[in-house]
Image 1 (cartoon, rainbow, N blue to C red):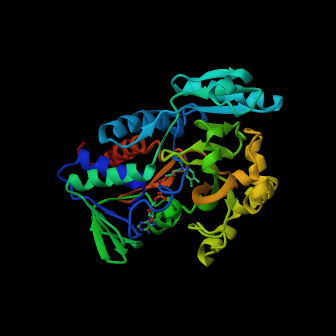
Image 2: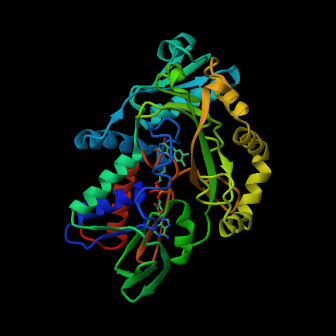
Length: 395
Ligand SMILES: Cc1cc2nc3c(=O)[nH]c(=O)nc-3n(C[C@H](O)[C@H](O)[C@H](O)COP(=O)(O)OP(=O)(O)OC[C@H]3O[C@@H](n4cnc5c(N)ncnc54)[C@H](O)[C@@H]3O)c2cc1C
């Protein structure tokens, strides 16, 4: 269930391993991949940031390697353009060192420390006092990847059914009855990959409400075409280690566009592609969750900065100009926004790692934020192995 990049990758892997199984993907929207899969930075992460030993670290490094191979095999445009992480102040050097340590422990290929001249050699318009260069970080259009996974699913004889928003889940003897807009689908087992709606489906299947998904909107600006030369590939800040977001970055897109963003603003709808969109149920779910208030008590200052970036074009431009000083507000135009499905624990912790859980006859992907698109093939293998154990499927 869920026709985003994760659900489609899981379906593809299950179909590949169980050629005699009857398999169907139920997607609520009229088309596949219309949520996070379509609204993101398009970066194939190399695995620099993640705590060694975490699922993110392992599945990102494996997933990136497999994704490049997959794109080559299928003729999907991807580019190992490399990225620089730039420190602009001495206070950031300790965290840069920690990132280097993590990247080495995670087996990120080719990562090296660079100085101010090294930054300029790679990104002539960027400024910083030290940095890291990750040559294997790259770019791709994740929507094209998801469409290709869906084709693999269909080629394996399985079905991708759109317009099937699952509304109810009932255990009925040896099967699950999934009620949706087009009737009922009876299944021996189910895997739920619902992105921003993951908690609701897990709870409907009998799981604990912890963690809850809280939507964080990420808006992007784009560089005017005549200023695209200011960014050669990918320029990232040194992120705050206590937040799961990477900060405003400058990224070349596979279609040549240069994006600046995303912001990270808590919003009132799980599909708040427009800032003004508020859905009563989504808002109540966020406000009624004790973790929301605990998180706000800790992060309200960051929230105020994000609000300024969201409201003021000039503040957003200034944040990016810290890395590329020639950037002016007039060089930037509004682009699109995505909404992150960020799991928030009851104790107010923004859950950093991928989270998978189980209910009777079902598996749930409960937290698959960035770099889950990069990691999709490795996540799919992880979930399929888990399904073989939980559902007693023959490999
Ligand atoms: C701003 C932003 C930038 C990002 N940048 C990157 C990046 O550069 N690199 C990277 O690797 N990752 C990035 N990510 C993360 C990445 O986009 C996500 O981790 C990934 O797309 C998650 O895929 P998904 O399939 O779990 O979710 P989604 O793509 O959101 O798919 C979930 C699907 O479930 C469906 N669904 C929900 N409820 C139901 C229901 N009841 N019945 C049926 N279907 C349902 C939805 O309609 C949707 O199609 C970014 C994310 C955001 C928001």
